[in-house]
Length: 181
Figure 1: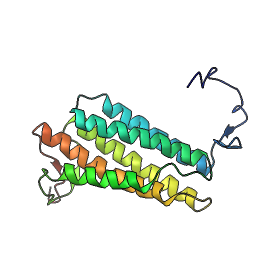
Figure 2: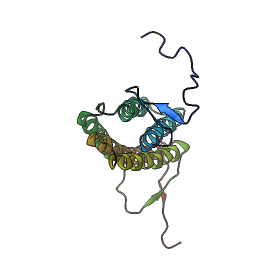
Figure 3: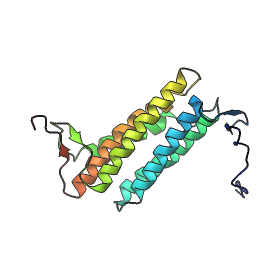
Figure 4: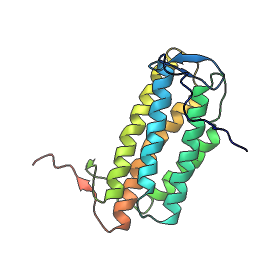
Protein backbone atom coordinates (compact mmCIF):
# COMPACT_ATOMS: atom_id res chain seq x y z
CA UNK A 1 0.00 0.00 0.00
CA UNK A 2 2.96 2.34 0.41
CA UNK A 3 3.15 5.51 2.44
CA UNK A 4 -0.24 7.15 2.28
CA UNK A 5 0.53 9.82 4.88
CA UNK A 6 4.07 10.98 4.36
CA UNK A 7 3.38 14.30 6.10
CA UNK A 8 0.87 14.63 8.94
CA UNK A 9 0.33 18.37 8.85
CA UNK A 10 -0.51 20.11 5.60
CA UNK A 11 -1.69 23.55 6.79
CA UNK A 12 -4.53 23.33 4.26
CA UNK A 13 -7.08 23.37 7.08
CA UNK A 14 -5.76 26.52 8.70
CA UNK A 15 -8.50 28.52 6.99
CA UNK A 16 -11.30 26.52 8.64
CA UNK A 17 -11.91 24.09 5.79
CA UNK A 18 -11.11 20.44 5.33
CA UNK A 19 -10.74 18.18 2.32
CA UNK A 20 -13.33 15.54 1.50
CA UNK A 21 -12.63 12.17 -0.07
CA UNK A 22 -13.54 13.47 -3.53
CA UNK A 23 -11.03 16.34 -3.34
CA UNK A 24 -13.52 19.12 -2.62
CA UNK A 25 -13.20 21.31 0.46
CA UNK A 26 -15.87 22.13 3.00
CA UNK A 27 -16.18 24.09 6.23
CA UNK A 28 -14.96 22.19 9.29
CA UNK A 29 -18.26 22.86 11.06
CA UNK A 30 -20.46 21.65 8.20
CA UNK A 31 -23.08 18.95 8.79
CA UNK A 32 -20.96 16.52 6.79
CA UNK A 33 -17.87 17.08 8.92
CA UNK A 34 -20.00 16.89 12.10
CA UNK A 35 -21.25 13.48 10.95
CA UNK A 36 -17.74 12.30 10.05
CA UNK A 37 -16.46 13.49 13.42
CA UNK A 38 -19.24 11.75 15.36
CA UNK A 39 -18.54 8.46 13.57
CA UNK A 40 -14.81 8.89 14.23
CA UNK A 41 -15.51 9.58 17.91
CA UNK A 42 -17.63 6.44 18.07
CA UNK A 43 -14.81 4.42 16.51
CA UNK A 44 -12.37 5.85 19.05
CA UNK A 45 -14.73 5.07 21.93
CA UNK A 46 -14.92 1.46 20.77
CA UNK A 47 -11.11 1.50 20.61
CA UNK A 48 -11.03 2.44 24.30
CA UNK A 49 -13.46 -0.39 25.02
CA UNK A 50 -11.21 -2.81 23.12
CA UNK A 51 -8.35 -1.92 25.49
CA UNK A 52 -10.28 -3.78 28.21
CA UNK A 53 -9.73 -7.51 28.74
CA UNK A 54 -12.46 -9.44 26.93
CA UNK A 55 -13.25 -12.76 25.28
CA UNK A 56 -11.89 -13.24 21.77
CA UNK A 57 -15.36 -13.40 20.19
CA UNK A 58 -16.38 -10.01 21.59
CA UNK A 59 -13.06 -8.45 20.57
CA UNK A 60 -13.57 -9.81 17.02
CA UNK A 61 -17.10 -8.34 16.87
CA UNK A 62 -15.96 -4.93 18.09
CA UNK A 63 -12.95 -4.90 15.76
CA UNK A 64 -15.19 -5.74 12.78
CA UNK A 65 -17.43 -2.84 13.81
CA UNK A 66 -14.42 -0.52 13.90
CA UNK A 67 -13.64 -1.46 10.30
CA UNK A 68 -17.28 -0.85 9.35
CA UNK A 69 -17.21 2.54 11.04
CA UNK A 70 -14.04 3.47 9.16
CA UNK A 71 -15.90 2.55 5.94
CA UNK A 72 -18.87 4.62 7.08
CA UNK A 73 -16.65 7.63 7.73
CA UNK A 74 -15.18 7.20 4.25
CA UNK A 75 -18.66 6.99 2.78
CA UNK A 76 -19.75 10.19 4.49
CA UNK A 77 -16.55 11.99 3.47
CA UNK A 78 -16.96 11.06 -0.19
CA UNK A 79 -20.37 12.16 -1.47
CA UNK A 80 -21.89 9.71 -3.90
CA UNK A 81 -20.25 6.47 -2.77
CA UNK A 82 -21.75 3.66 -0.69
CA UNK A 83 -19.45 1.54 1.45
CA UNK A 84 -21.93 0.31 4.08
CA UNK A 85 -24.31 -2.32 2.72
CA UNK A 86 -27.28 -4.27 4.04
CA UNK A 87 -25.15 -7.42 4.45
CA UNK A 88 -23.36 -5.73 7.36
CA UNK A 89 -26.70 -4.88 8.98
CA UNK A 90 -27.79 -8.50 8.55
CA UNK A 91 -24.51 -9.66 10.17
CA UNK A 92 -25.08 -7.27 13.05
CA UNK A 93 -28.66 -8.48 13.60
CA UNK A 94 -27.52 -12.11 13.63
CA UNK A 95 -24.73 -11.24 16.05
CA UNK A 96 -27.13 -9.31 18.26
CA UNK A 97 -29.62 -12.18 18.30
CA UNK A 98 -26.92 -14.69 19.22
CA UNK A 99 -25.57 -12.56 22.07
CA UNK A 100 -29.05 -11.84 23.40
CA UNK A 101 -30.11 -15.52 23.79
CA UNK A 102 -28.28 -16.26 27.10
CA UNK A 103 -29.24 -12.93 28.67
CA UNK A 104 -32.09 -12.79 31.16
CA UNK A 105 -35.16 -10.95 29.85
CA UNK A 106 -35.34 -7.31 30.81
CA UNK A 107 -38.19 -6.44 33.14
CA UNK A 108 -36.82 -3.03 34.16
CA UNK A 109 -34.77 -0.32 32.53
CA UNK A 110 -31.08 -0.62 33.24
CA UNK A 111 -28.56 2.06 34.05
CA UNK A 112 -25.13 2.23 32.42
CA UNK A 113 -22.75 0.35 34.64
CA UNK A 114 -21.77 -2.94 36.17
CA UNK A 115 -18.31 -3.78 34.92
CA UNK A 116 -15.99 -1.18 33.41
CA UNK A 117 -16.36 -2.84 29.99
CA UNK A 118 -20.17 -2.72 30.27
CA UNK A 119 -20.04 0.96 31.25
CA UNK A 120 -17.78 1.66 28.26
CA UNK A 121 -20.28 -0.14 26.02
CA UNK A 122 -23.01 2.16 27.26
CA UNK A 123 -20.78 5.17 26.62
CA UNK A 124 -20.17 3.90 23.08
CA UNK A 125 -23.93 3.37 22.69
CA UNK A 126 -24.64 7.02 23.56
CA UNK A 127 -21.92 8.23 21.19
CA UNK A 128 -23.46 5.96 18.54
CA UNK A 129 -26.86 7.60 19.03
CA UNK A 130 -25.24 11.02 18.57
CA UNK A 131 -23.51 9.83 15.40
CA UNK A 132 -26.86 8.56 14.15
CA UNK A 133 -28.45 11.97 14.84
CA UNK A 134 -25.63 13.74 12.98
CA UNK A 135 -25.98 11.47 9.95
CA UNK A 136 -29.75 12.03 9.96
CA UNK A 137 -29.17 15.80 10.10
CA UNK A 138 -26.86 15.47 7.10
CA UNK A 139 -29.58 13.52 5.25
CA UNK A 140 -31.82 16.61 5.31
CA UNK A 141 -29.25 18.46 3.20
CA UNK A 142 -27.48 15.77 1.19
CA UNK A 143 -27.96 12.29 -0.16
CA UNK A 144 -27.14 9.70 2.53
CA UNK A 145 -27.16 5.96 2.07
CA UNK A 146 -30.11 4.56 4.08
CA UNK A 147 -27.94 1.60 5.09
CA UNK A 148 -25.67 4.01 7.00
CA UNK A 149 -28.54 5.13 9.21
CA UNK A 150 -29.83 1.57 9.64
CA UNK A 151 -26.32 0.43 10.56
CA UNK A 152 -25.95 3.03 13.31
CA UNK A 153 -29.42 2.28 14.65
CA UNK A 154 -28.63 -1.45 14.94
CA UNK A 155 -25.19 -0.74 16.33
CA UNK A 156 -26.58 1.12 19.33
CA UNK A 157 -28.75 -1.92 20.08
CA UNK A 158 -25.77 -4.24 19.69
CA UNK A 159 -23.64 -2.14 22.03
CA UNK A 160 -26.43 -2.33 24.63
CA UNK A 161 -26.48 -6.13 24.38
CA UNK A 162 -22.66 -6.37 24.41
CA UNK A 163 -22.68 -4.30 27.61
CA UNK A 164 -25.15 -6.71 29.18
CA UNK A 165 -22.98 -9.60 27.95
CA UNK A 166 -19.91 -8.17 29.71
CA UNK A 167 -21.87 -8.03 32.96
CA UNK A 168 -23.14 -11.61 32.52
CA UNK A 169 -19.65 -12.95 31.80
CA UNK A 170 -18.37 -11.25 34.96
CA UNK A 171 -21.32 -12.69 36.89
CA UNK A 172 -22.55 -9.18 37.63
CA UNK A 173 -26.18 -8.20 37.37
CA UNK A 174 -27.23 -5.26 35.27
CA UNK A 175 -27.73 -2.07 37.23
CA UNK A 176 -31.51 -1.76 37.41
CA UNK A 177 -33.28 1.58 37.45
CA UNK A 178 -35.24 1.89 40.67
CA UNK A 179 -38.42 3.75 39.90
CA UNK A 180 -39.63 3.68 43.48
CA UNK A 181 -36.38 4.73 45.11
